[in-house]
Amino acid sequence: MRCDAIWRNARLATLAAGAPGLGQIDHGLVAQSRGRIVYAGPANLAPALEAERDIDCEGRWITPGLIDCHTHLVFAADRSAEFERRLAGASYEEIAGEGGGILSTVRATRAASVAALVESALPRLDALIAEGVTTVEIKSGYGLSLEAESRQLEAARALGDRREVAIRTTLLAAHALPPEFAGDPDGYIDTVSREMIPAVAAAGLADAVDAFCEGIGFSPAQVRQVFEAACANRLPVKLHAEQLSNLHGAALAAEFGALSADHLEHLDAAGVAAMARAGTVATLLPGAYYFVRETQLPPIEALRAHGVPMALATDCNPGTAPLTSLLLVMNMAATLFRMTVDECLAGVTRNGARALGLHGETGALETGKWCDLAIWDIEHPAELVYWIGRNPLQARVWRGR
Image (cartoon, rainbow, N blue to C red; front, side):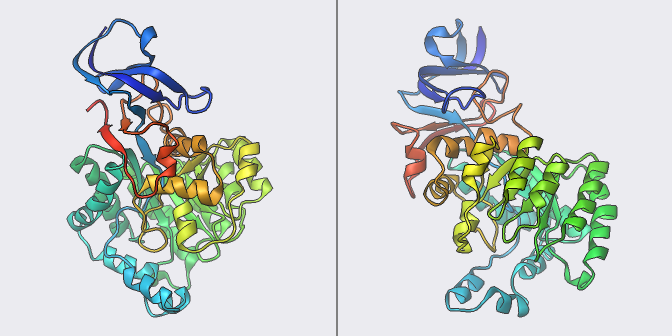
């Protein structure tokens, strides 16, 4: 078989569906043609292969390229000054009352051009890429008007033109109440549902629709209206749910066949069961849990018992998770949530792909999927979860390149 590239003398963690553990293969190889995997498995079972590029991995480990399935990567300015004030004792409510908090990011983002948003996001994206990330989801949510949300999404799409990375975009207009709708959340949700979602869908700017279902966000009834509009415009949904309280948002998301419900610290048994029935992924965000000093753990044991796939992501955002390291996320998930090494690695590969509706295309070393690889200078996959501040990436391959 003629192909474009072969990676030999490698140990593989295939993360293939149905494989035990990580799908480990001690003497393996990966071959690709036209950006797709044509073989990933034991070297002694491979067909006869010839390639223009034949790479000796010298015993290194190959995993699927990492997937960050929940980020707010595109925004203007930061909130480090507010962080410093909170360390000195100021409350979030005090800062918000003075015009800070999310609305400070909204003001800065509304004032920024697409080009400026792209330039500010590139260093954050580059940090992810440097750790082997090959697919990134990017949400809007700091514009809160059709024009500004569209600019955020355009900037997110443009990042995929500037770097070799797959970008998925999500409309998160139902993130917070903009100042021009103060006191009128229903009016804003009408605008999101009747104007923003149809316009963004028609422009092809979003791959999904998200919302923030919380006491400081939007009610389940308001989220339902957003989801109905998304479905009417043939966009899948996902949800920020049960982060600070239990409003049964995860069950609502499952009712709509959501790709994922995210955060989930206050998720109850009924919500877990609903997600299991719907096949909705639980995307866990230990960086935000750490940064806001949360104490309520997500129900990991219940999610395991019901077979709910668990993804992990950075939640990179300026307010509650200024984090650009999926390797650190895995360590946090292991230490704070007591997730296993296998669960952590599946969370940033196979299950991350499922949370984006991309499990047929990426997230595992399987024939037919994109050749997105991370090649690591490690002796055991546990090192990817164990080390704090060490990046053992030796090479990153995106779509065969």
